[in-house]
Image 1 (cartoon, rainbow, N blue to C red):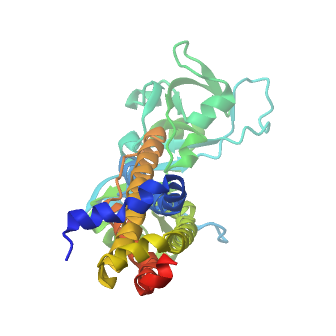
Image 2: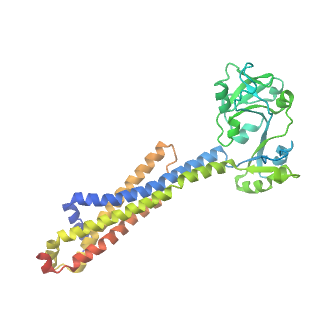
Image 3: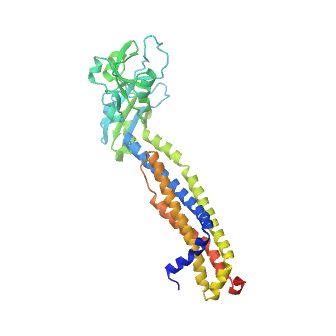
Length: 388
């Protein structure tokens, strides 16, 4: 019985004497393993980035609005925010209301010029609830009821041609001028805010005859209790007509979008499996050719006393070494590609340890399977025939 070191040394003889063939055969295994690691590692990093993004935006956020396209139109009661705050797990709630007023940059523009912007009455506690950030200037204050001021969403500021508030720009809402005191950064979970001009709740009542009914209620609740809150929210806000209340979780839309984008990883995994099979066939083909070319060596070793078991072990070891080397190279290549791509996308780096282990283990299994037939064939060669 040969010791493992001698067996390994004997098994790599064929690889050393034919390095180019061995390199090309191992390349098939390496490509398959690398592909498998990349198509599992990159979606894992993407998912970690999505979780980080949603956590920052607010995975604990719900939005409440009237069911659209109702006759007569559905409306939320004025007490909607107060009712939402009474629900135990709700930590904060705020709202906006559509004033149905038109906004213009100049009094020379037609009132119906169509900027596509909405003038919303906003409660003063809105920014922390929707996780909004001020890009320039400041948020609304209670003094806005006496000195009319507005804050622009990111898209609204672009369409009105206002990039900063240092010069105190003004916009015309209805027939009254309002001073722009702030511009919001983009709010991905509340895109309607981006396209809105926001005025204080009390100022909207005074200046624009706003009726005080919210059109969207935003709330944040304990994430572990979010579904419970969601199930009772409609009845709590509008107990008389809960069927006219629509409750949404905006972070679900982003998660679903990213899940759709990542569904292609299944296809790539299938391609990786095909690459592994092709690599295994390449290794088997290399070993069969190696047996045919080395018949004289096999015959000489048999004539000198080598048993069939040792011949089988020699060629099986050679196949396993070839596949394992390809697997290790593919694993290293796949990990480097995953880390580089995640770094380029500014994603958290998630190393697919399980895929790496499975990849190397799969390479060893492929080596065993690919080497069984060639090793058995080599062991069965009669010494006289092999020498001849």
